[in-house]
Amino acid sequence: MKRLKLLLPLAFVALAFSQLTAAEHHEKEAMKEKMASMTHLVITHEVEDAGHWLAAWQGEDSRHELFKANGAAHVHTLQDPDNPNITGLIIAVTDMDALMAMLESEEGQAAAAEDGVMPETMKMLIQAQ
Image (cartoon, rainbow, N blue to C red; front, side, top):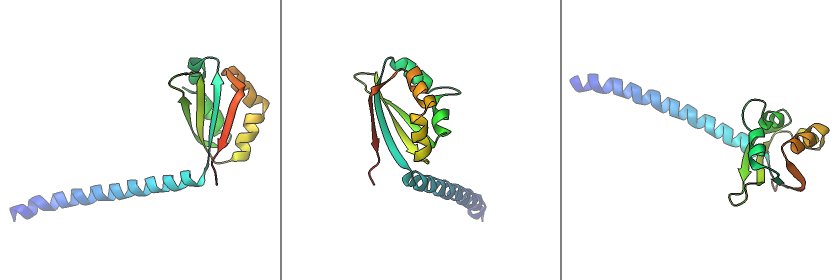
């Protein structure tokens, strides 16, 4: 009887944690499906000053906000370890038209110039279908 009194609360705790784990698993699977349904881009470019460029992607009012407001669900920043001024972005896109319009707009080009992006070095790769 003592063992039953001891095991019963443990069984309830294990059940509770298994439910949390199942919910977390479901959430992760839903996120994977959402990410898989998005188009992904890689944009590479050289910048004049890697520190200045990276600073634009940090803190409040960062470039993340500009991209998010224009069709990008998530952006990862990248740097070449041998030449930090070669930089790039991996972008999960929810609205390609909005993102392309922003990149081509005066606002997008001004942001790139402000960040020291050398436009002649920019290359874009779009996820193959």
